[in-house]
Image 1 (cartoon, helix red, strand yellow):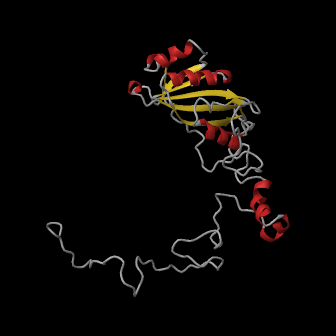
Image 2: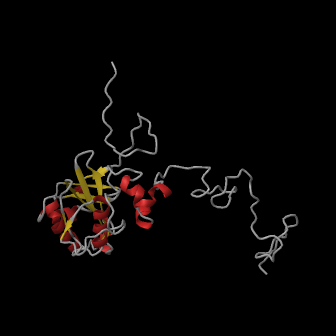
Image 3: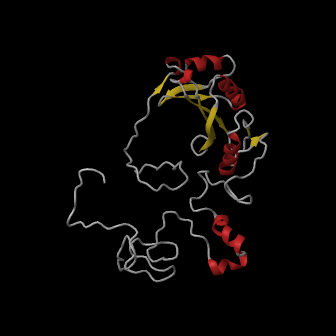
Length: 268
């Protein structure tokens, strides 16, 4: 009897192979109360509920409810965690049905030399809004726009929540694990339709969006090092002689004879 193979939770195709018996080593997680971060934990416990906390790779990680994110960040800022270096999301919807939002904070104060880095996390469901924190940390303004652009997460009370990387009329959110690696039907024709018009689809053809594709016979989109030809010409197997200065032209750098080297005792 053959056992039924469980459904693969990773929707996207993987470009690498992992041995089926390989077990990755897990990083050690320490209790927050046993580290220098216990001062931070004690201050937060007075105001908000900490769902989970630990220290991993000398960095504190705290989980709170979505409703407590703004208050927690305000308290952390008063505790001299005054720099938000990063903010984004992780698509875990295929694993547990949630997005994981994280805020990376740093402290540049000398008193925090042993507890500088802290990461705040919360979980939200798909199509669930997040409160904007751009008024608390201005650096979150563009990060929240990027998170909206890539994952489709809406941030309430954001001053200008528009796409920041993709075109305004782009369909879909590229960092979702359900988004095709090659792009969907819309992505295949976007630039053709924008630049030339849909009537030129049969003339130009769809965009080649497969990042793993290499065609040695395509001299328009690929160049073969040492065997280059003019764009659009047939590929060649002739190896070109590589020179470092033009022949029969004044030298840019003086060529030193390799057969009679001279060793100088001091700089001239």
